Length: 499
Image 1 (cartoon, rainbow, N blue to C red):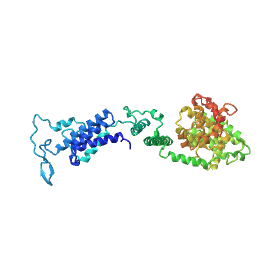
Image 2: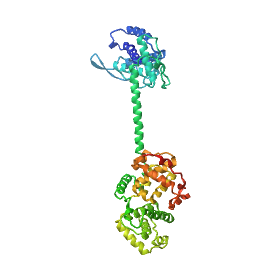
Image 3: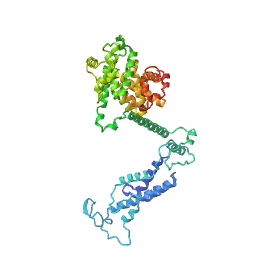
Image 4: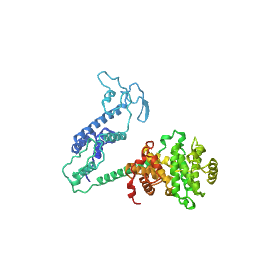
C-alpha cells in the first residue's frame, strides 16, 4: 500500500503525541513515545510551515491538559468546595488544600489567557475525558487545513503525489493554492499515467454539481412561467386580483360557446361581406367623433355580427342595424349615452326615432338580452399586461386588431387568438424578431406556432391599410393622439415563415 494521505498522517502523529500525556491509557513510558514520535516526525514529508503549525497546536493542547489536572485542585478556586470520588467514597474538597498564591507566582488562570482557544477568566475549565481530548485534537488539526476548492488541478496533484511515493520517484511537493482560486493542471494531463480513482470520483462529483446547477436554472425558468403579473395591483380592490384568473377562464369558455359563424353571410340574400366592411369602417369614425370608450366599439361589432347571423336584413336597413347596435353598446358600457337624435343626425336623417326604437326592440329580443359577451378588447387588456407592454406596443396592437374588425374573413379566429396575434405581430414589427415570451404563452395559452397564421394576415392588412376605400382605421391611428402607429413598418419577415 502507498503512503497515507496528508490528513490521515497529521491525525496519526497527533494521537501519538498526546497519548503519553494520558498515562492511564498507555502502559509504556512517555519517553519511549517521545523518542518514537521525534524519529517518525522528522521522516514525515510535509512542509515546515505545516509542522510548525501542528507543533503550536500541540503546545496549546498540552497547556490545556495541565488545566484539566489543576481543575481537580483548589488552586484556581480556593474558595470553592467541590466533591470528588476518592477510593470509592465522597469527601468535601476535591483536592488537597493549597496555600494562597504568593506574589512571586503567576496563577495558571493568568497564563491560560495567553493560550489560543483557552477559556477566558473567570470561566471555569470543564473537565473532559481522554476520548474527548482526542476528539479535540482531531478538531484542532482540521483547523489548519487550507480552504481550497476541490478542482481538477488540486485533486490531480494529490493523486500524482501518492503515485510518485508508491513507485519511489522523486519526492513531490503538493502545491496547495493559498489564495483559494481554482487552477487547471496541464502537466498532469500530459503524462501517460492512468487516471487514479480519486480523480474519477472528483470528476463525478463535479458533474453532479453541474447537473444541480442546471436544475437551479430550470427552477428559474419555472419561476418565469409563474410570473405574477398582478402583484402591482394586489392592493387595488377594483383589479379583483383574487378572481382574475377565474374570470378569464370563464371568458375562454364563453367565447367558445358564443362563437359567431364565420360563413353567416351565406344566409343573407341582400347584403354581403363588403357592405359589412363599409358599415364597420364608418362606425369606427363615428365612435372616434363621439369620443366613446374602446369597449363600446368592440361590443358594437359583436352585436352586429351576432344579429346578422340570426336575422336576415335588407340592404337599406343595414345602417339602421349599425346605429342601433351602437346605441345598445353605449347603454351597456358608457356613463353618458348619446341621445337617439344624435344618432339620427349622424346617419343624415335616414331613419326616424320610431324606426330606431323598433330596431332596438327587435335586436335585443333576437339576442335574448345577452350583452355580456367576451370581446377582443377584454383579452387585449390582459395579454398586454402579460407582455409588459409600453405605450408604443399598445397602440400598434390596437391598430392591428381594429383592422381585423373591418375584415369579414377574420371572424374565423376566436377573440382571444386575435388579441394574442395582434400583440405578437406588434412585437415582431417593433423588435424585428419573432419573440414570444413564456409568460405570454402561459397567460394567452397560445404558442408562437398557433399565432403565425393569423399574424401573417395581420401583416397583409397592415401593409394595405393605407390603400383602398376602407381607410378609416389608418386615418385614425395616423394622428398624434394615437402615436402615429399606422406609420410603423410592417413585420414583413413573418410572411416568409413557413408552418
